[in-house]
Image 1 (tube, one colour):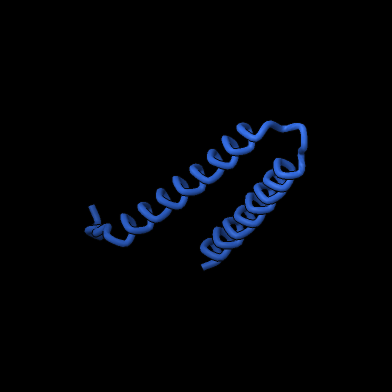
Image 2 (cartoon, one colour):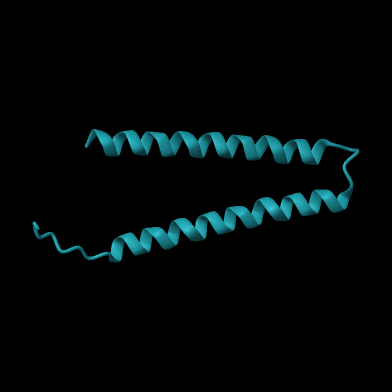
Length: 75
């Protein structure tokens, strides 16, 4: 029980840290007048594609974990 609570707290903390970092990165990119427009779009596309891939992998793992069937025999 405590192990699950610890993992949940760790994941929530990581999500907040990563989200905050991405927010500040996007704000820095938007507010930088010297950054070319092409680089801004490329960085935005990179961030969005990484988030989509991460969400897809998490969803796939969640579904695989839900469909796993274990035989709980002692050997």
